[in-house]
Structure formats: C-alpha cells, structure tokens
Image 1 (cartoon, rainbow, N blue to C red):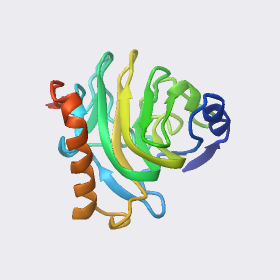
Image 2 (cartoon, rainbow, N blue to C red):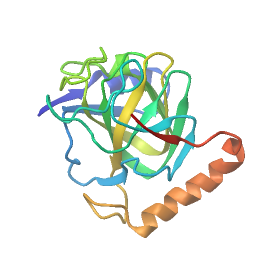
Image 3 (spheres, rainbow, N blue to C red):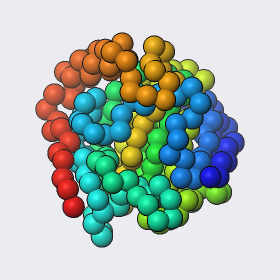
Image 4 (spheres, helix red, strand yellow):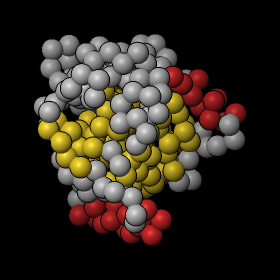
Length: 213
C-alpha cells in the first residue's frame, strides 16, 4: 500500500477561485479510511443520475474492472463512465470523500458540487506515485483518492471525453453513519432528499444500465 498527498492540489483550487481541497492517493487502498463509511459500492443504481453503466468484468477497449492487487480485480458491479457519458452522484454533505478508481486515465474528470465545489482532471491528480496512463493492474493507477475539502460537498459528477472512467466505490465521513459499514437510514434519507432536489433538472436523463461482460 502506497500513500501520497497531492499537495499541489490545494494551491491549484485556490488559484482557480474555488474552495480549497487536499488529495491523498493510496495504491490498492481497498480498506475504507479511518472515520469513513461506505456511501455506495454501485451494487444498485440508488443515488445515481446519468448515462453511465453499471458493469461487471472487463472488456478490451470498453471497460476494465478496478484492480485490488496485481493479480485480483473487483468481481462485483462497478460504475463505468464511457466516453461522452457522465454520472452525477448525490452525496451526503461531507468535507471528506474518497473514491476507489480503476485504471486512471488522463481525461477522467471529477467535479464536486456544493460549498466546497472543485473540479479535477486525472492529469492534475497524477502526482507520483499516482499516474494516469490507464494501466489495468498497477497500484499507481488503481487505488483510493481521498479528498478533504475546506467546505462541504454534496454531489459528484464523473465524466471522461477520452477513455472510460471506472469507480468501484465511494465513501466519506458522514454524520450518523456506521463507520466502515453500510450507511444508516438517516444517511440514505439525506441522499434521497438530494436526489429529489436534483430531480427537476435531471428528470429527462436516463439512469445507469447494468451490463455483464
């Protein structure tokens, strides 16, 4: 397991006139960070609004299951954001969110909304040991990014004009949630409230579809 704080990101965010954030990368970081609880592992489409797919397995030139080690990959359903697609995930209000990302590519984009709004491309996040070359198995391209914000974020939009963006799970520091486990009913209630608020603007967009390789 490798960890690296992407220190340049805070300065980048401030220079862009947005709230600040710091980012830490953990290669093969399958364990949830201390204090975080699972928000979604994409077992269902709950909390998702967009055109991405819920996918299982890997298919060349289509999607790669996130690697959990040099020889193992995610065998469960994960989010696959294909070129031209985007996916918005409603988040419980939090100042810390983490994502397990697979085969990080330069064009992958992560846009957080809320008071702590900030947007990163994978190229900006690729500070060693993290790299953005799309490798399917490397610990430098498959791992957990931990985002710590100066103000709460409430949504995340994932997109990629180039290669597919794969995400195995999203977690965060969520008030009232069971740390390291499935969110409590209060957490899901917050998510549903957020979904209702976005519903009017996003009602016409299609939901993720599940596919198996």
